[in-house]
Amino acid sequence: MGARDERGAPPEGDAAVHGQALSKVYGTGRRLVPAVRDVSLKVRASEFLAIIGPSGCGKTTLLRMVAGLESPTSGTISCWGGPPADLAREHRVGMVFQDPALLPWASLRRNVEFVYRASGRRPDPESVDEILDLVGLTSLAHLRPHEASGGMRQRTALARALVMRPSLLLMDEPFGALDAITRRRLNGELERIWAAVRPTTILITHSVDEAVMLADRIVVMSARPATIVREVTVPMPRPRPAVPDEAFHHAVQECMEALDA
Ligand SMILES: Nc1ncnc2c1ncn2[C@@H]1O[C@H](COP(=O)(O)OP(=O)(O)OP(=O)(O)O)[C@@H](O)[C@H]1O
Ligand SMILES: [Mg+2]
Image 1 (cartoon, rainbow, N blue to C red):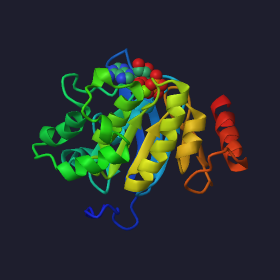
Image 2: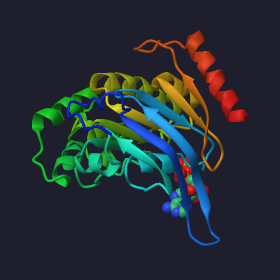
Image 3: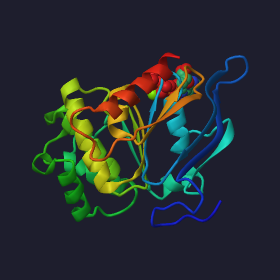
Image 4: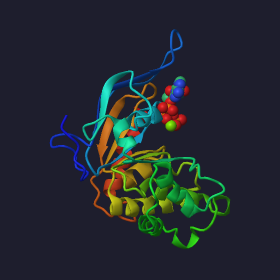
């Protein structure tokens, strides 16, 4: 593997994220739980990849291996040519989960700033202003999490993940706990926000529509242990059309067929 390129492009010929024959088995002795089996995956720099699959199949496990939070039982994974943990140590990974897990006593703005403190840096007010503006929270940033709506809390989580301009954005069901209307609105906003920052992105979602709306490519996984059953390319232009078109319906259909297979 070549050396990393700080500008964000992976070394020539390499994918930004490259998993080879990844498997993960939890437990020991007779209580073995195979969660991921033989998954090979490449994600290009600035690509938006979505992962869908049945509940409990091993999606979060796969994402945790990409994040360097879990080591594979076998296989290898690299991010920009190096171990995922190195990328995380350099604060180049942003993560968003279903639960935004904000600090309850701090304002939304302080929650975003906290990323700097957690990594031993001084908050950069300009970057914080910019990202709050991008996620549409400027006039509400003084609120504390309990005073904010679920959508606002999740925007804060997104701002927190993006404020240090990560190379890699990992999202695990970020809108899973939101109502359908808020979720739809945030889908549109995420596309706009993502296009402004263009991090290499992996999104796990249970919503096929969400995956097709947002992703360049969708990986459909099998029931546990997760294996890749189909890859669906979404040939829709960006910004994505507000009204679902033929290409949208076709991609949804392809994903559904793969999930039902
Ligand atoms: N730390 C762990 N120790 C033991 N087993 C685990 C651990 N984490 C996950 N598992 C098991 O691995 C399997 C895959 O879990 P995982 O959370 O990766 O699935 P998922 O596809 O993200 O599920 P969901 O759609 O419900 O979020 C499950 O059977 C789960 O119980
Ligand atoms: Mg999960």
